[in-house]
Amino acid sequence: MHNSTKKWIFTKISSLILIPFMAWFLVSLVSIYDKSYLEIIGFFSQQSSKVLFSVLIVMAFLFYALTISEVFEDYLHDDKIKNVANKALNFFAIVIPLLTIITIYNLK
Image 1: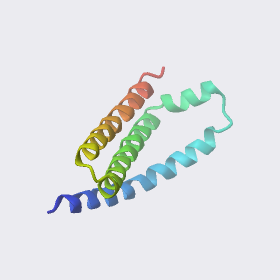
Image 2: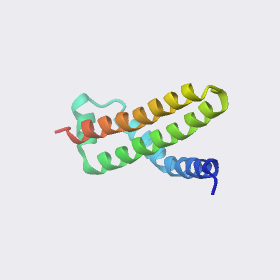
Image 3: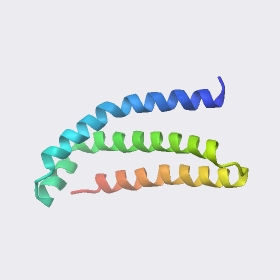
Image 4: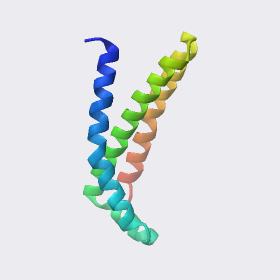
């Protein structure tokens, strides 16, 4: 299978996986919107919220990295710049979710 075909399939699969997690997050966001800081921390301290939010963050950044790398492929013509941009994109797509998950799991 060609590399671009794999990317296309992973993009479609990750977007389908994101749909229920985004629905859960939007419902949860509405329910905690007017809550106090301690109630919001309590929400994110629940094990189920930690797991669901962690999966959401990982899948969102995977989708983000796949789609932005396609933009780089289409619009950046210098291979050096494209490689640096893709490496920076992949670095941030790993580091930001990792830091977010570590922070969430260190609550309470």
